[in-house]
Amino acid sequence: MTSTMPSPAPTTAFTANSAAEPSAPLSALPAILGTYKRQAPLFVRGDGVYLYDEHGKKYLDLVAGIAVTSLGHNDPGVVNAMQEALATGLIHTSNLYRTAPGEALAQWFVDHSFASSVFFANSGAEANEGAFKFARRWGGTQGFTHKHHIIAVRGSFHGRMPGTLAATDRPAYRLPFRPLMGGVTIVERDLDELARALHPEKTAAVIVEPIQGEGGVRVVDPEFLRGLRALTRERNVLLILDEIQCGLGRTGTFFAHEQIGVVPDMLTIAKPLANGLPIGAILVNDAVARAMQPGDHGTTFGGGPLLAHVAHHVVQRLSDPAMLQHVRETGAWFGEQLQGIADRTGQVRAIRGKGLMWGMDVHEPAAAIIGRAFEKGLLLVSAGEHTLRFLPPLVITKAELAAGLAILESVMLA
Ligand SMILES: *Cc1c(COP(=O)(O)O)cnc(C)c1O
Image 1: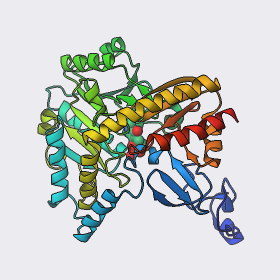
Image 2 (image 1 turned 60 degrees about the vertical axis):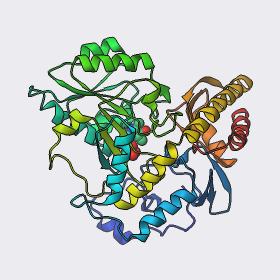
Image 3 (image 1 turned 180 degrees about the vertical axis):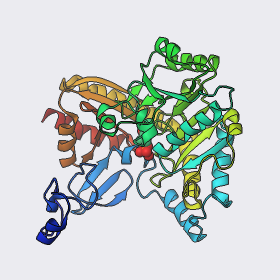
Image 4 (image 1 turned 30 degrees about the vertical axis):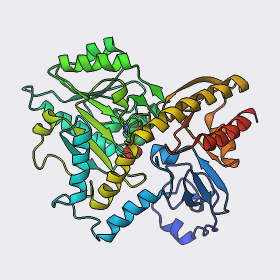
């Protein structure tokens, strides 16, 4: 990893005093813990669908901070909402006190979804961890002492915390951290398997992403989800939909589940909710809301006035029918263009997606293509070793996408 400043040489005194021999030379350790492989240049500025590095080089951003900056960078409406919030001087009070922006945002969701109440968290994983707790609390009110089991499905990604990691189906993420939270099982994405696994006296909830993001951009079969909804009702089990990546306009409707005709008991959202500020939310129906009591869950920062005010602006923008129409139309066109690249290059095994969320399985390691695209000023992310993932800002135009597609095609043939 390169850096703009020379790293100080390790001092012998430090080495001599450390209890154990360090596993890497001290000079090689980054100040930010090395849990990510970061690309070398520093990004210093963002504008619209572009990021700029320290050398002034421009990059077309088809990652959007992993489906977060849906309105692009430096959006005037988002900047204005931040300035309005800052002007009040009220950034944080804790959840011990009432503030208007959080209440207004919660009311907006109550008015525009199945939810009767909302809990604000600070990330996707925190939203899902909370949903698991709510499910267990609800399970305890159903007349059975052991109704606390959570079921996730094959290919899932629900987060990196102890509970959500237990519900995340990627061995490399899970194995080094065992034992994971108990009472969580991953089952095949198959109705017969789930019918065997769901127990009316033991299972509290099933959690599913309508489109699996990290798991390779897999659009879950609508028939499967409708069947699962019927099954969970029949067995008195909660259905949690995780729309942290696919929700809030990404697939061309405000919620992904609108297109499937399935209403969950809980819905988790996060990534684009404040266009880059950290906020997540758990939307819950009446039955779950009634099971929760003061003291049952908490978070210091969740839904603070700055975040909530910005998020309130963002959800109004992302639910605008013209925005959703743009995503559907641009997304369908983008999918056709990806198919064209597949036909011309012969380098593609499969293409999947909806709206502006696409995955492309490639023969080469995805990282090699992503590296060459980066050199040419195009930001892409993977979803597994051989899948390229496209999560552009939802405001992107066809002309901007066409420029990215041209770079993609050239580096796939390189
Ligand atoms: C990103 C993601 C999460 C975790 O969100 P964090 O904010 O990274 O904790 C959970 N579920 C899905 C579907 C995601 O894409």
